[in-house]
Length: 148
Image 1 (cartoon, rainbow, N blue to C red):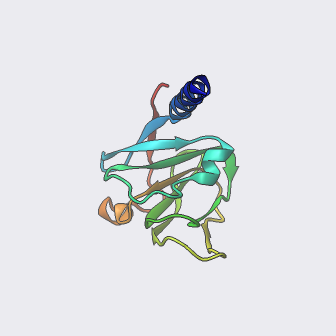
Image 2 (image 1 turned 60 degrees about the vertical axis):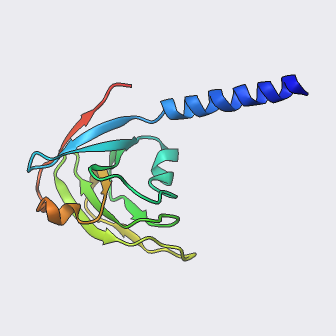
């Protein structure tokens, strides 16, 4: 019994370490030179989960969704507990659309937020980021990816 418990604990520990190793980070540099640290969402699983189940988002951080190809991506706030500003970027990293202060949704049918414009990247950040940094359509956002 003791061996099974130890093996189970080791498996859980290894699995949680492996899961944490998959998390990658980068940064976005706004036009006013502000640098925001981004957790990267680069897989279908990460795209679906996004910032669900988070109760807070540290200042100066967010999530950067990196897609394989440009498309008119839509987002919803199902199972999110925080308000967010959502910013869509084109292939050349220019803002093509944004929505400010998107509220969480605890309803069965949550509204979708999205742009008909083609986007390759989407940024989720704390509410007020768009206004604070005076972001506007056409602004270029620089992206830096950190090594694993």
